[in-house]
Amino acid sequence: MLKKFLRETSGNIMIMSAVAMGPMLMAAAVGIDMAERHRATSAYQAAVDAAALAAAKVLNSSGKAPAQAAADAKSYGEVVFNANIENLQNSSGTIEIDTGNGDCVGQGVVATAQLSHPMFFDGIHGYFTSQGSPDTLKLTVSSEVKCGNDTLEVAMVLLRNEAMGI
Image 1 (tube, rainbow, N blue to C red):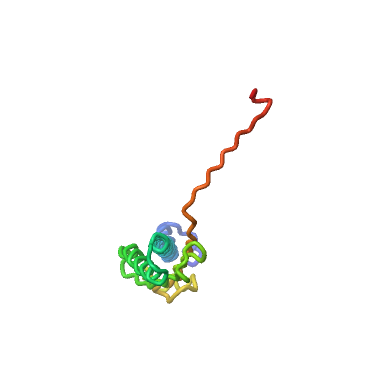
Image 2: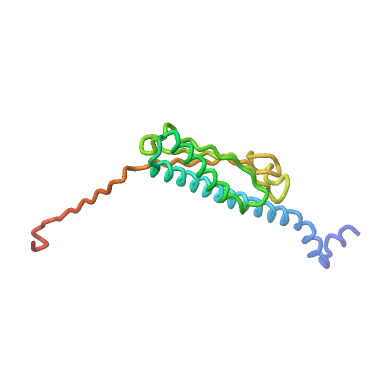
Protein backbone atom coordinates (compact mmCIF):
# COMPACT_ATOMS: atom_id res chain seq x y z
CA MET A 1 0.00 0.00 0.00
CA LEU A 2 2.80 2.42 0.89
CA LYS A 3 4.68 1.60 -2.34
CA LYS A 4 1.58 2.31 -4.37
CA PHE A 5 1.12 5.63 -2.56
CA LEU A 6 4.74 6.69 -3.18
CA ARG A 7 4.53 5.81 -6.90
CA GLU A 8 1.29 7.72 -7.41
CA THR A 9 1.93 11.13 -9.08
CA SER A 10 -1.55 12.47 -9.75
CA GLY A 11 -2.29 15.48 -7.54
CA ASN A 12 1.39 15.91 -6.76
CA ILE A 13 1.50 19.51 -7.99
CA MET A 14 -1.07 20.54 -5.38
CA ILE A 15 1.00 19.13 -2.55
CA MET A 16 4.22 20.66 -3.87
CA SER A 17 2.50 24.04 -4.30
CA ALA A 18 1.16 23.92 -0.75
CA VAL A 19 4.59 23.06 0.65
CA ALA A 20 6.36 25.77 -1.39
CA MET A 21 3.79 28.52 -0.68
CA GLY A 22 5.16 29.38 2.78
CA PRO A 23 8.78 29.95 1.70
CA MET A 24 7.65 31.87 -1.41
CA LEU A 25 5.47 34.23 0.66
CA MET A 26 8.28 34.70 3.19
CA ALA A 27 10.73 35.57 0.40
CA ALA A 28 8.26 38.11 -1.04
CA ALA A 29 7.74 39.69 2.39
CA VAL A 30 11.49 39.97 2.98
CA GLY A 31 11.92 41.53 -0.47
CA ILE A 32 9.19 44.10 0.19
CA ASP A 33 10.62 45.01 3.61
CA MET A 34 14.16 45.36 2.27
CA ALA A 35 12.94 47.54 -0.62
CA GLU A 36 11.10 49.74 1.88
CA ARG A 37 14.23 49.92 4.04
CA HIS A 38 16.26 51.11 1.06
CA ARG A 39 13.59 53.63 0.03
CA ALA A 40 13.32 55.06 3.54
CA THR A 41 17.10 55.28 3.96
CA SER A 42 17.47 57.11 0.64
CA ALA A 43 14.62 59.50 1.44
CA TYR A 44 16.02 60.29 4.89
CA GLN A 45 19.52 60.83 3.56
CA ALA A 46 18.13 63.23 0.95
CA ALA A 47 16.20 65.12 3.67
CA VAL A 48 19.29 65.46 5.87
CA ASP A 49 21.42 66.54 2.88
CA ALA A 50 18.84 69.18 1.95
CA ALA A 51 18.69 70.45 5.54
CA ALA A 52 22.49 70.71 5.78
CA LEU A 53 22.72 72.54 2.46
CA ALA A 54 19.92 74.93 3.42
CA ALA A 55 21.56 75.68 6.77
CA ALA A 56 24.92 76.24 5.08
CA LYS A 57 23.35 78.59 2.56
CA VAL A 58 21.74 80.70 5.29
CA LEU A 59 24.91 80.66 7.37
CA ASN A 60 27.14 81.60 4.46
CA SER A 61 24.93 84.35 3.01
CA SER A 62 23.77 85.97 6.23
CA GLY A 63 25.23 89.35 7.05
CA LYS A 64 24.25 88.92 10.70
CA ALA A 65 26.40 88.27 13.74
CA PRO A 66 27.65 84.66 13.91
CA ALA A 67 25.36 83.68 16.81
CA GLN A 68 22.22 85.03 15.10
CA ALA A 69 23.26 83.57 11.73
CA ALA A 70 23.78 80.15 13.36
CA ALA A 71 20.34 80.27 15.00
CA ASP A 72 18.70 81.26 11.69
CA ALA A 73 20.58 78.50 9.87
CA LYS A 74 19.50 75.84 12.37
CA SER A 75 15.89 76.98 12.23
CA TYR A 76 15.78 77.00 8.43
CA GLY A 77 17.52 73.61 8.22
CA GLU A 78 14.89 72.08 10.53
CA VAL A 79 12.08 73.53 8.38
CA VAL A 80 13.62 72.03 5.23
CA PHE A 81 14.14 68.66 6.93
CA ASN A 82 10.55 68.47 8.18
CA ALA A 83 9.22 69.46 4.76
CA ASN A 84 11.22 66.64 3.16
CA ILE A 85 10.10 63.87 5.52
CA GLU A 86 6.48 65.01 5.50
CA ASN A 87 5.52 62.52 2.76
CA LEU A 88 6.96 59.49 4.57
CA GLN A 89 3.87 58.15 6.29
CA ASN A 90 3.97 57.35 10.00
CA SER A 91 7.66 58.27 10.17
CA SER A 92 9.13 60.44 12.86
CA GLY A 93 12.51 61.99 13.28
CA THR A 94 14.58 64.65 14.93
CA ILE A 95 17.50 66.54 13.50
CA GLU A 96 20.43 68.25 15.18
CA ILE A 97 22.25 70.86 13.12
CA ASP A 98 25.69 71.84 14.36
CA THR A 99 26.93 75.12 12.95
CA GLY A 100 29.94 75.24 15.24
CA ASN A 101 31.09 78.78 15.81
CA GLY A 102 29.06 80.12 12.88
CA ASP A 103 31.96 79.97 10.44
CA CYS A 104 30.68 78.03 7.46
CA VAL A 105 33.96 78.27 5.56
CA GLY A 106 36.15 76.97 8.37
CA GLN A 107 34.11 74.45 10.30
CA GLY A 108 31.08 73.86 8.10
CA VAL A 109 27.67 72.50 8.99
CA VAL A 110 26.97 68.99 10.31
CA ALA A 111 23.40 67.69 10.35
CA THR A 112 22.56 64.43 12.12
CA ALA A 113 19.07 62.93 12.28
CA GLN A 114 17.60 60.13 14.36
CA LEU A 115 14.70 58.57 12.48
CA SER A 116 12.07 55.93 13.08
CA HIS A 117 10.16 54.34 10.19
CA PRO A 118 7.52 51.58 10.37
CA MET A 119 8.05 48.43 8.31
CA PHE A 120 5.36 46.42 6.51
CA PHE A 121 5.86 42.94 7.92
CA ASP A 122 6.38 42.82 11.68
CA GLY A 123 9.20 40.62 12.81
CA ILE A 124 10.84 39.94 9.46
CA HIS A 125 12.92 43.13 9.49
CA GLY A 126 14.03 42.59 13.08
CA TYR A 127 15.03 39.02 12.33
CA PHE A 128 17.32 39.93 9.41
CA THR A 129 18.86 43.16 10.73
CA SER A 130 19.92 44.61 14.03
CA GLN A 131 18.50 48.07 13.37
CA GLY A 132 15.47 48.85 15.47
CA SER A 133 12.68 46.76 16.85
CA PRO A 134 10.99 44.05 14.77
CA ASP A 135 8.40 46.42 13.34
CA THR A 136 10.32 49.73 13.21
CA LEU A 137 13.47 50.74 11.36
CA LYS A 138 15.67 53.10 13.37
CA LEU A 139 18.26 55.09 11.44
CA THR A 140 20.94 57.62 12.18
CA VAL A 141 21.76 59.68 9.12
CA SER A 142 24.41 62.40 8.89
CA SER A 143 25.53 64.99 6.37
CA GLU A 144 28.38 67.51 6.40
CA VAL A 145 28.70 70.67 4.30
CA LYS A 146 31.81 72.80 3.99
CA CYS A 147 31.35 76.22 2.47
CA GLY A 148 33.87 77.72 0.11
CA ASN A 149 34.89 81.27 -0.37
CA ASP A 150 32.95 83.12 -3.03
CA THR A 151 35.78 83.29 -5.53
CA LEU A 152 36.17 81.53 -8.80
CA GLU A 153 39.52 80.62 -10.24
CA VAL A 154 39.83 79.97 -13.94
CA ALA A 155 43.07 78.60 -15.28
CA MET A 156 43.66 78.38 -18.99
CA VAL A 157 46.63 76.55 -20.35
CA LEU A 158 47.86 76.90 -23.90
CA LEU A 159 50.11 74.14 -25.05
CA ARG A 160 52.50 75.13 -27.78
CA ASN A 161 53.83 72.13 -29.53
CA GLU A 162 55.81 71.66 -32.74
CA ALA A 163 53.58 68.76 -33.76
CA MET A 164 50.56 71.09 -33.67
CA GLY A 165 52.16 73.42 -36.18
CA ILE A 166 52.05 76.42 -33.88
